[in-house]
Length: 223
Picture (cartoon, one colour):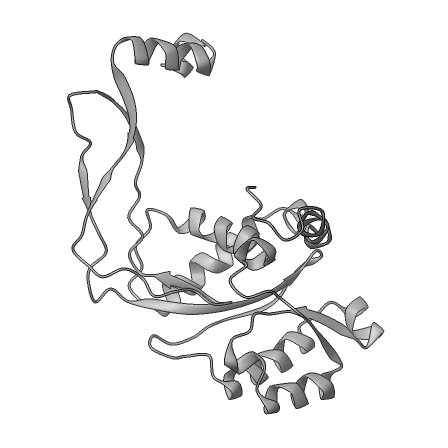
């Protein structure tokens, strides 16, 4: 209606409300269990149902869309990025966890794939959660050997993790409505997503978010 009439969105919404319409997102039928909690990594399911917003008469219920199957495949993706772009990512085989050995290997790959300017400086700062593989003794030794300094990250604070509040949110929006059959198709989608991001996408918002936390004395921030 907004595109057809060229009317402002607020006017369109007023008309719909006067006609007793309301905005509703497609309901989910609980056919599967909920996804496990995220840590620093992102799980990319093979099935990503799209729940679109609909304007419906108040007496009409929104359509239902089936939830992901109980045994739907999913891959864990580890992603390393900075304001200059992404360094390195790895999509683990289905059912594979990020262990100390896996994480140390990812750190080595991340350093070797970093921009030349970063490698010439010979020192990296890395922000990571308090997951066990990130802070094992072997990990600490590998961080020191690679010249990486760990930046403390408060637990349960996805709003302070650039991967969570920025990169993974964009990736989730990009894969919404898509279905994958295997790990290679997931990788192809991630590669397409990276290629579609303009240079302006790779922002440096962490310092300003830290300042907001200090200004709010640690209270919840509603971005």
